[in-house]
Length: 65
Image (cartoon, rainbow, N blue to C red; front, side, top):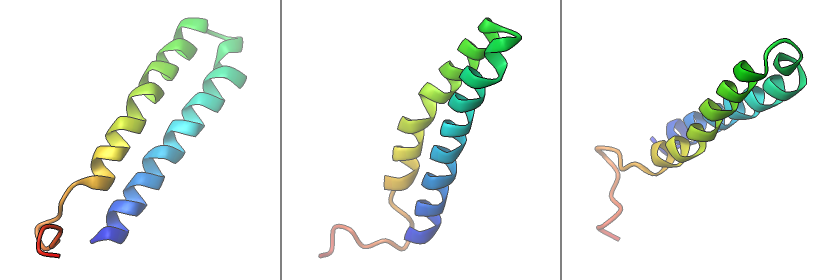
């Protein structure tokens, strides 16, 4: 279960990096508001990725240790 959460975390963080790089290296040449919008979306992704990575699965035994 932890590997699925780790995979989801790295996928979300990869999407975040791609959005930022595309926004300020490609999209800004055509539309500054679109680049800012992409950056705002990318700004929300890291906290969501941390929540996804740290959620407790149904068969996790965190408190029994």
